[in-house]
Length: 282
Image (cartoon, rainbow, N blue to C red; front, side, top):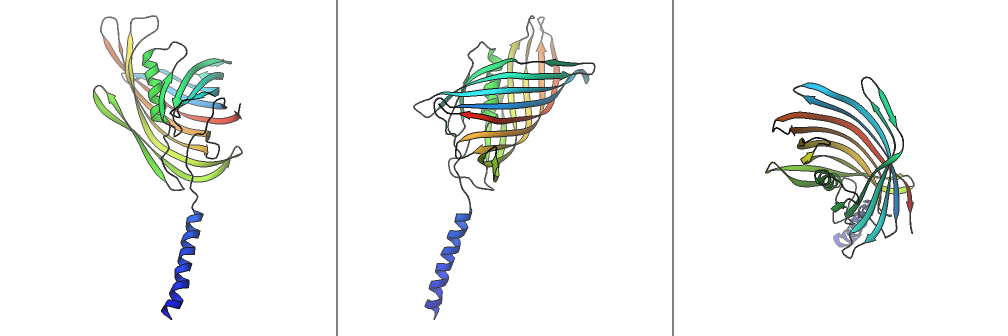
C-alpha cells in the first residue's frame, strides 16, 4: 500500500516543483549591439542649483534642458568591447532665476567615445574634441559609478545586486554603492523589458582645474544620492528608458593667484528622464 501511494505522490511533487520552476521567469541581462547599430534617445534634465559661501546664497537658479543623444556602434573589439560614438544635441534650455528667464535654442552639446562590455561595465571614455583633464576624469567616474554592471547569471523578480566602487579622496578611500533590484517584467515602448529599480550614491572627486580668463583654480568633491528605474529590453539587449531623481552636495574650494583659499558649497537636485525613440540597424 505504501509503495502504491508513494510513487504517485513522488511524481506529483516532481510535477509541482517543475511547474513552479517554469513559473519563475529568468533572463540574462546583456547588451547585444553590432557594428552599425544606432540608438537615438531624447532626454529631459530638470535641476535646481544653489551656491553657498559662508551660509550666504550667492547663486540660485533652475534649468530645464532637453537633449537628443545619438549612439552609434562603430565597432565591436575582439574582446567583445563595444566602441560607441555618442553625440548630444541640446534641443532647448530654459534658465530661471529670481529676476529673469532665459531661453536658448538648439546647439551641439558634446561628443564622446564610450567603451563598454556587454554586461554594461564601462572600460573608458574618450573625447574627440579637447576637454580639460579634470572634467574628463569627472565624466569617466560618472559613467563607471552611475551605470549598472549586470550580473553574470540569470535574474528574476526579487533578484538584487549591489555595485560598489572605491574612490580615493584626499588620499583616503571612500565608497560609492548602488543596489539594483529586479521589480517586474513589463512592456515599454513596444519592447519586452525587465524593470530595474536602483538606489545608491556616487562620490566623484574634482581635480584642480583652471577658471577661464583667470589664474584661479577650483577643486572639490561631489556626493550624489540617486533613486531611479531602468527599463531594459532583454531580447534586443538595449536600454529603453531611465527615470531618476537625484540630489547632490558638492564641497568646492577656489585657490586664488595669491594663494588664498575660499570654500563654497554646491547644492543641486533634479529629475532626469531618457527614452529610446529610434533604433536603427545597418
